[in-house]
Structures are given as C-alpha cells and as structure tokens.
Amino acid sequence: MSEVDFGIIGGSGLYHLAGIQEVREVQVETPFGAPSAAYMVGRIGTRSVAFLPRHGPDHSLSPTEINYRANIFGFKKLGVRRLLSASAVGSMQESIAPQDIVVPDQFIDRTRHRPDTFFSDGIVAHVSLAEPFCPQLTEEAVTAARDVDVRLHRGGTYLCMEGPQFSTRAESNMYRSWNVSVIGMTNLQEARLAREAEICYLTLALVTDYDCWRQEEAVDVEEILANLKHNAIHAASILAGVVAGAEQERACSCGDALANAILTRPDAIPAATRERLSLLVQHRLPAS
Image 1 (tube, rainbow, N blue to C red):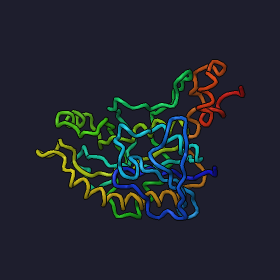
Image 2 (cartoon, rainbow, N blue to C red; image 1 turned 135 degrees about the vertical axis):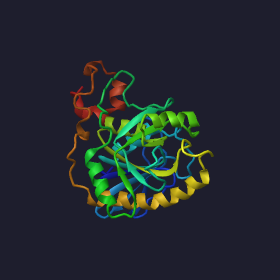
Image 3 (cartoon, rainbow, N blue to C red; image 1 turned 90 degrees about the vertical axis):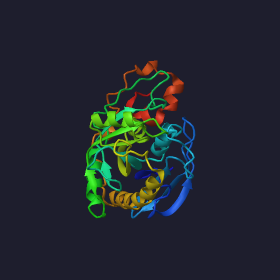
C-alpha cells in the first residue's frame, strides 16, 4: 500500500472534498474494526491525500458511534503522517460568529462512552497532550486561510461533549464560565489517537451557531444546516491550501510522541497485543 502524504477528515456537511483528482476508493482493514467508510485516495496538486467522512457518506454514525480507533489506524496504515480535519461547532463567545472558523489550540473533554487509546490489553503508553494540535500544521492553516474570504480565529479551547443531544442551557452557561471558545462532539478522540499514532493533527472548527447560552430559543437546526453548506466551501479551500503549501518535511515533535511513552517492559507485552499494534510500536520496541 503506497504512502499517502495527507489525511483529511470531513465532518457534518463535508462528505466529499472538492479538488481531489484521480480519486480511487480504498478499503482498509484494521485490528479495531471498520473505519467510517472507504478512504477516497487521490491527489491535490502533487500531494497524495486520503479523505474520510467521519460520520459515513450518508451521515449514519452519531459522534458516539464513530469508530475513532479504526479511522486513525486506517490513516496510519495508508502511510499518513499529517492529518487535517473539519468539524461543525457551536460558538461559546460573542466574538466568534456563525460562519467564522476557529483553529483551536486546546481541548476540554466532556465525553463519557468512547474508547480513545490504542494502548490496552497488556501494554501501557502515556503520550503528552499538553499541546494537542500540531504547531506546524497550525501555521500552515493560518497561512492558507489568508487566501480565503473568511474570518479566522487563531487559538481557543474546543470543549468536546458526548452528544448527540445539544447542551442544556445550564451546561452551556457552565462551559462559558470555563472560557471555552467552541463546543463540538468529535475532535478530541481524533487528536488523542493521532498523537498515539505519531501523526500530526489539526482541526478547522466551523462555527454553525451560537450555543443555547445566547438565545432564548433552542439551537436552530435549520440555521445550522444553512451555515454548514457555507462553511464547507471555505473549509475545502483552506484544507486544499494547507496540502498544497505545506513544507515537504515535518519540523514538529508529533512524530516522536511514543519515543519515551511506552512503560510496559517489552518482554511482558503479550504477543497478540504486540502483533495488533505492530504498525504503531514496532519501531519503538526491541525485536522480539
């Protein structure tokens, strides 16, 4: 399986990515089950890319049902080293309006029901998530956004909630008191798993609405759908710009996340676990 330069994950409203040429469908098997869909592998300019809609092509997977481990493992199996995502979010700040885009730099986790590590069944690893987004990809996304007619906010905290329901007003106001920037339902698990897989990760948080803290009525799904369509066009342009303009080599530390993270004594790791995770750990463990 030939290596792919970039992975792109599409969220609500972004089920296909305009601008990919020579597209072919690639099914990837993983030890964690099936990814959300087949990967659409092609190229943008001279760069090879693999696109995956996280909710499936028909948006049939809720945020909790997404098999995040299979999705990220599949990208790793394709040879992806840099992973970009786009996702719909609600704004938690008056200054961040619908149709704006946020490039967050931090997370708060409010999920409850999702596997979010590759390391279990006899192997323990602790990677650093102090800076959960790749700084190099952040710079490249900010640069690419300058050529797009959109208001971009650099930095901010993404609160990841379980969903699929939206927040109660009490929850929304509590999150506001934490000074978060946006609220969404998907990106945290992707960032955690990408770091464990030593893949660079960045998200474009596409603002569809103000969460229910701001208005007397509930979140308006019709408004969200209209803004999704608008945001998808801008997101596709920025993502293509990042792919086309990115440096050839990585200059960050994301690719060394496992260097000192595996704490289990190598000879104590069960053979089946070692085999299942060989794609992730074989270069970090002595030969068996």
